[in-house]
Picture 1 (cartoon, each protein chain N blue to C red):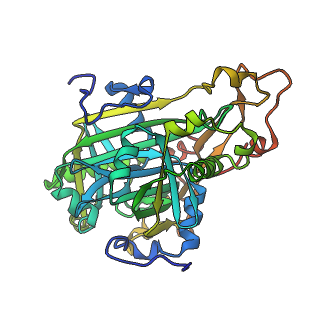
Picture 2 (spheres, one colour):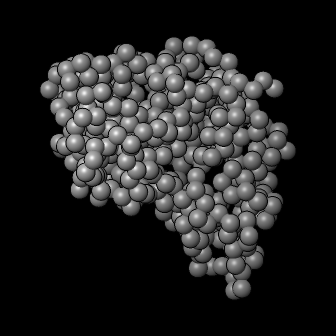
Picture 3 (cartoon, each protein chain N blue to C red):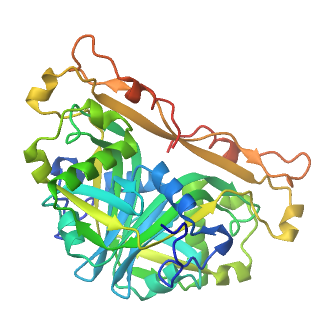
Length: 220
Length: 220
């Protein structure tokens, strides 16, 4: 497996090229840190976006939805899909509006979506998607019913090309603006899990398992 | 101005219809709470997504980028664009993988993108985009230079149709699963601004203004 995605006219970052990364380590780290991806496909010539949860194994992403959902039926028939995961890390407050911007980690993936039909491959993909948000939870839950597996559509999106863009710096102002008495810097944005809230039908004496508890306070 | 977006085959929510909203109050509240939108367009028949900051005025969204950026040039020529803003609010840990899900607020907008060419309309759109993330900051900063305005492309995306989807509940498990000794509930996810970090070229004695300071600790 190569350790960098190839650069073509499809995935080449043209704006702010200094912030671009194509190495798999950076691309995969951002994909692995996210919980929601935005997936775009073309319906009757027009673009449609759907936010979806996902999971990654090597150079493939897995997505799921109701088997009969539009997003699954259309991805199944599409030659191309585009997926983006963006984690927003803060606002960069520059000395001018023009140079103000955001701190973020973002990955865009281009690939061919394929329906996963094989029963065992489908269950494995569902496990991968579950593990992305709650590592260890899958093994604590009952095996999916056959009916549930049938009702679920799973898409494999092979990562054919990808690019990451990471903005983590301070303002980059015009020389003359540094002379103005304007405060400038960064306001970080933090996404963090807070405290577990049980539903009112948890059986007496049942408490959150260790794998669930350890997510509390975790940052994305 | 009508207070609900019309429902057509383009924006009708088909899955989890109970969570769907088409009223402008709900749609606009989610758009106004977000900081980053995902925008999709079609390039040579294939979908492309770009994360962008934005601002809203009534039934229009404004987007910006470098005037020569691909996203601006393509949106300028596109008949249709789709935009989604999703705020993730937590993980719903059900008693089965099948019923596990997310808490979120999400809006999808469909409309026709148009380049904003008029000088004053362009500056006003830039102000609206700036105010979305840092209300009050625009008036503290210098007027944009003509060169900066020329280098920036602004797109107006009229909201022709839209739908919101809001998931804020507890797990909805199968009857028999409630008998199992599995903890279930919600793990909330909170996105919050933390503390300001000045850059190392802030002039002596200059402190963050009130409009900047009041963002600290704010939740999205």
